[in-house]
Length: 212
Image 1: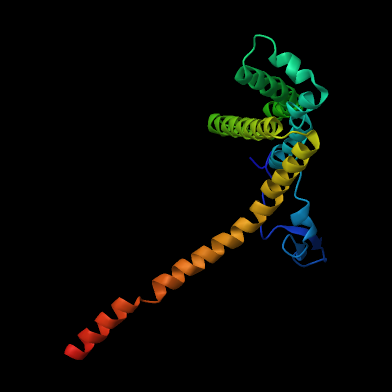
Image 2: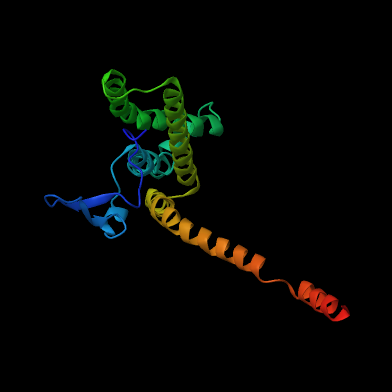
């Protein structure tokens, strides 16, 4: 899967010094330069998780609130159409418009992978890639549905786009960067709790010691 996902290797070098009659020497790794953390490698994860989710905001922010501001929403609701069907139609049309450019770029890449002589994908690899694509589509569907929901609840489009940009920034930058540190804190507390006995167990051990 390295063709589509570069990943992050702690030992991978960005700069290497080549000296005759000696082994290559690593000058700079990913951990040494924070720029590579802020701007990751452009792969399928970056396209789906950052670019396409950001592209979903212009498609969803004025789906309902924009028509409420212009007054067309009241005309649509006055017809024989239910509100859940209206919201589902807004979501379906916007979602199909969102994933269309994604497939336009993805299908030629898959065609190149299938015909390239140096890339040999097995049946399990194609199945894993299919599950990854399905997961990416579900991720975009949930994010776009969240955008339509906030657009339906907000009264103004400006409020909707600010809320979506805040949720996007938190979900893309804050949570992925803070989750390893939070996991380390909980893991450290768990190990510390297993290492230090409780007061009751300490008293019981002390009592048994004095009995013998």
